[in-house]
View 1 (cartoon, helix red, strand yellow):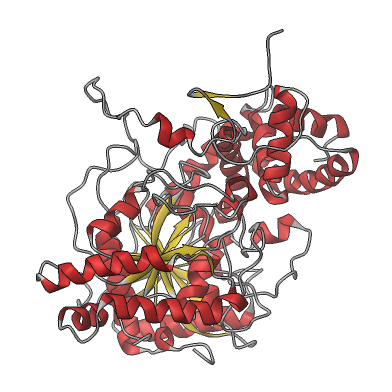
View 2 (cartoon, rainbow over the protein chains, first blue to last red; view 1 turned 90 degrees about the vertical axis):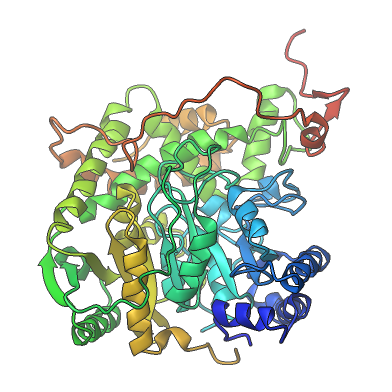
Length: 484
Length: 95
């Protein structure tokens, strides 16, 4: 049952082979067993989850169930869920009970899905290893000493360890795709503007985008069907007709043009990751795809540009945490300014403070043009690289991450080394394009390798088709870590 | 690029972050490393390129000016650190 697809679970629920209460309880039992080790969930509320399951069972009994009705879904702790503790991985929000639902949560509630709990994450989604979480790191089910990736590390670990049927994540610079790659699961970051950011705690508003993390492309398509949709409360939500992301899953791939950017296979890529990606490309050739060599010449600039723009936006977004209206307030202070400074210094972790300071610096008087404006101009060059590349190909493929999962504490105190591990994912956010990661084998340390698939704007259905056809031909996505 | 101690102190103050001398020095080293990475941008010729602030070329949506939110003061103040009579309490700012 824990290896069933979402459509299999849905069918079992609708056929009354299992109730949602039974299914939810069995996941909760599994979480109780494994979470003390993996720390994938920050909050589990058996009573609230089972109450939702009971409502789902009523819908199932009356025959008014939808695809995900009664299915337990793990929610990243960045999404406000009414009545649930919502921490964003930070001491600042350690006791914050959300007074309203994020749009994504509303969508799942409308679909009759069960909120199984809130998953661990890097603090305010700033990190690539889940080690910046105030609530401790998450462990990778493939090797307890390894990181799960980040920032959606709890979600990736929970999906890989079969501690949920599927999960939500968010991706500002790779936070869905990189942990999906490191934990051997499937995740997709849709086109910017496709999923509403309402109630999703903001990091870098022009880059943040939510998406599903699951065990297959087929499951991701069903999740995306629920998560997407116009929402007037997000000023960047796009008004588009509702899509069925499953519609093209079974299309053959003959004639598909896959672009391989030479910059994604250059220095810095681990040999084992490069080899697995090439094997996946060979599999696509067998499926009838045509390989096209392309270039994304400004790839190396994506990391520096990102580390100007994202911290700039973060420093502005996180100024709301002042210890006045909600969140942490320091126990002792002398005056108002002292209260702000102490509350923020004690409430934020090291990485968050670092990024607030970078952002404050690049936006400060005299530096704006040299940093922020220059970064915005190069952002256009990076986006233009993709526009040019998509004239020659239908999808772009490459590695998701330059290496497999590294060990906890391995990257130490050097933030730059950690930042560089997002080299292949960041440019996609800057351009606002959809990107996904699917498992394509294992590295020399027997840890999963992720294949990244980048699509043109609004081409999610085709990307899911491309991923699904590979998952029909191979079984990497259905491998489970030992003991799961 | 290397930041000075004064640079870091100024940024910490602007960002409303209290930091002691040890923290300032640690931040100075790490921020200098990050700005070295960022400095790669400076060599790029961007003359005539329009800045891209957003992934989609959107214009701001407008709507009718009407009340869309109910008053939920009690619900929202329930999670505040300190409130009294419907007001948020902060240290006195005017003598």
